[in-house]
Amino acid sequence: MASFVPRHSKKKDGLRRDEQALRRLIERGASRRKLLNAALRVRDDRIRVLRAKQNQNLERNATERADFLRDEEKIKALKLVTPEMILAEFLASKFSN
Image (cartoon, rainbow, N blue to C red):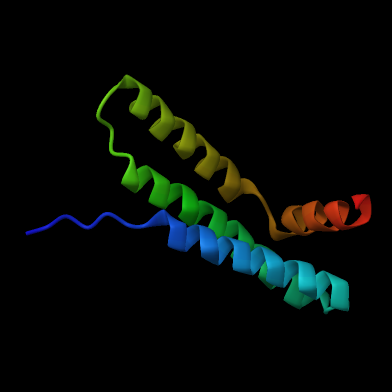
């Protein structure tokens, strides 16, 4: 039986799509609830991208083990990020341009 290795490029595409949707909602002045829901999707997509990357790079040597652990730390940090923090990140990038 063949092993399934997820293609994390699909996850990256989903992340890019949801980030663009959040930017559009900000530009259109959507309600706070819609903005926070979109920010939550962005956070979840970021976690999915890291999980897929971990699944693609199986631990074969010390370098890959270090990458795996680094990604795991990033995932833990992302789980602590609130939708308000992501929304603030996108709002700051909008006003800095």
